[in-house]
Image (cartoon, rainbow, N blue to C red):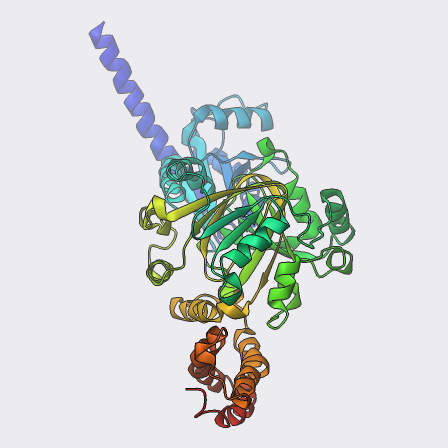
Length: 513
């Protein structure tokens, strides 16, 4: 009996060795074809492989493992075989022989045998085609799973790592930095009581939007309008590939509205431009935000935009570009915000993180560098609105499919923070796509039209601003002068405007000190 078992094991080893050799031959044969190896994308490779499938039958002359190679093509989060009509299946980044066998039996019902030794996989990496035998496929699955689990914001990270981290952070209650109000009247009262008109630095959450002077289209109106302008373009983030993509409004809505069980990707549109007249005219910015932004408006489209996110989308910790303040209103669904106070220490940590080589890797993640007691968790459900001043560091998780209205604006009492965030973006090398190109011109205009005029007004009355209720204006004036001089002279487009302002400034240079 033992002799028989030993012989069976030996035969199995020999069969495996033979299968491994066959698999390498199949892989190398397909890899050697110029039309395959020079493919520019996975679709082109798939078409080229179909032309050479008959060649693989000659390699497996004994046909002990099947007649020809069984090829699979990896499109990020889903997989297709070589059959032209193949609709594919979801890529779980794990190898299951039954899954691949089942797919082959569905697409090729006449194929009598299936063996993993006939499997050859194809994927794109750095714009080059990679051809894999079945052992290489398994190794890639393991590596890719580990990579995605360690990559903050990816689908696997959000599924496996985010819950453990987020559960350690309790829902925030009102404190010195975070204020809750039932309605607009309560918000206005708390804003006054906390002396925010001379330096807005607290986040305000309002449960009922009525009375805020805002108006937002309902879901039906919004989606209908988007369909009517379906050819317009938007940019969205794909948490599976961790890349930004452009597509039409209609195309994005098709992705967004898919049933959860049929979603291969999690998509997140972070700023649909609401400049289409039908949307622009239907959206009324909250009165508070309108009042704040009156004297400092960089680009009109930043005042009104729409965020459409699928369940499971995660936005990494960041500050809003240019240190802009923001309002945020949830129309449908739920999002969880994680706020971190913009202290100099925290901003420096964020800058080091964004500059570092380990950006977005879980074991070096910014979210793990901050004590959980210093992170404020706020669940935003339908109907809630918040107002966030400049500089606050925040991350966002989408608990349910969500549609929200938002807008960004500069606010004059937050100019010191806005400048600090601008300099942080400069130092961290933030891409221009995620910055405000009008930052310096907008602040230069405010400096000339508002601050210079205020200083001259106080001079004419022989009053000192630095001991008055408007000391913040004088302090801001002093801060902006060297900043604007440095960045205006560095930009030929606004150098002339600065020279004009400088002449006005010299008239009051030695006063009000």
